[in-house]
Length: 527
Image (cartoon, rainbow, N blue to C red; front, side):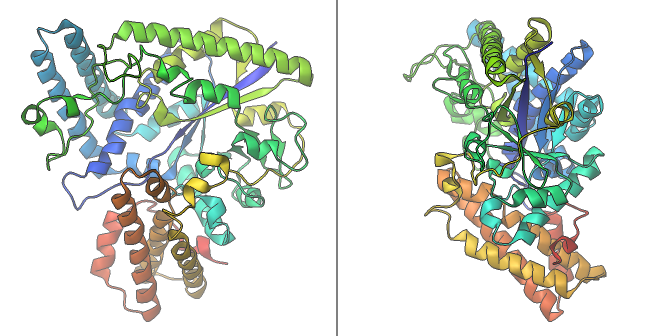
C-alpha cells in the first residue's frame, strides 16, 4: 500500500492571438512554438506510456482560449506552413554544419523532431490536438480541467459577480463541447482566489480548484494538514494547495533542475546567431530576428561563453533528476504519513509551457519520472484530484484566503502602476454587458449576433495576459493595443445595439477576427 499521493498538474494556456488580417503575425508564433516544443512532445510522452501499458495519472488544464486556437482552421493551416518552414531550415542546417560534427548531429535531431511534429499534427491527429488530449482523458489516464474563459484575473473582476460567473460558465460550456464532459475542476487564472468565488464555481458544476500555498495556509480556520490535504469550502467545492518544495525543484532556474549546465540553453538560437541574409527567409518578413527553435548550446554556466549541447548528457541528467525528484517525494510522503497519520497528497502544479519550450528536456524528465514511479517504488501513487476526493471524501471545511501566485502573492503583478488604468474600463463594460443582456433577453438574428459578439469582446478585454505583459514589459505595445481594441469594439457594439443601428458589414468583420466561442450565449450576463 502506498503512503501518499502525488498530483502532477500541467496548465496549458496561451492568450487568444489570431490575426487573419495579416499574412504573417509575430505573436502567433507563441502558439506554433508551443505546439512544436510543448504540446506534441507531451502527447508523444503520453502515447508512449499508453502504448507500453504504464498506468499513470496526470491532470492537464486546457484553457478555453487555447482550445479555440487549436481548433481554428486558419491557425491550423498556418502551423503546417510554419513547421514545414522549420523542416526546410533544419535541412539547410544539416548541409551548413556538415563539417561541424558537434552541431551536425543536433541539426539532424531538430530535423527529426520537426518531421515528427508535422506527422503527429497532420497525419496522426488530423490537425486536432484537442482530440489527442481527449484520447488520454477517455482512456482514464489524464483528467482535463478548464480555466477562466479568457484567463480573466477573477479577484479583480469580482466587483461584479455576474462578470465572473460569465467567465466560468462560458469556459465550462466550451470545455464540454470539445471534450465531451462537463469539467469537474478548474485552474483558476493565475491561481487567484477570493472568498465567495467557490460559490460561482459550484454553480457551474466545478468540484475542485487549485491555489497557491498561502491561499490554504491562511485559510480560516487554519488547515490541520497544511497543503497536504484539500479543504472543502462551505459551498462544497474543494481547494487543493500547491506544495512549495516540489514546485521549487522544478520551477527555479537557479536552484531547480532546469538550470543544470548540461541542459539546452534557451537563449542561444540561430535566429539571432547566424548571418542575417542566411536566416532572413525563416524570420519575420520585416527582418525582425526571432527564435527558430534551433539552439545548439548548453547552459554551460552563468558567463556568456557557451559550449555545444550534448543530447545524451542532457538525457542522462533528466533521468537523474527524475530519480532525485521521486526520492525526495518518497521521503517527504513518508515523513508526512508518520506525522499526519493519514496519506498526504503532494500537489505539484506547473505551467505546461515550461516543459519543452523553456526547459527543453522537461517532457523527457516527466517521462522518466512517471515510469520510475510506476516501477521503482511503492510509496507514491499518482492521482488526480477527483480520484483523491472519491477515495478521501471527508475533509476539513474552511474558507481559503484571498491569494494569487506571482510577485508577493496578492495580485500585485496584475494591479500596479503599469496596468491599473484598465480596470475602470472593464468594470464599466461589464455593467453595460449586463444591461444589454437584461434589456434584450430574447434577441434573434442580427441583434443576437451583435450581443454575442459584445460578450466575446468583453471576455477578450478581460484577459489577465494583457496586464501581465504590461507589467513584465515584453510586448507592451501589443498588449495595450489588444486591450484598447476589444474595449472599443465592445463600446461601439453597445452603442449600436442601444441605438438600433447595427452595421452588419462591420459586425461580420470582427466576428471573423475574434471568432472564439462560436456557441457563446450572451444571456450568461443576464441578472
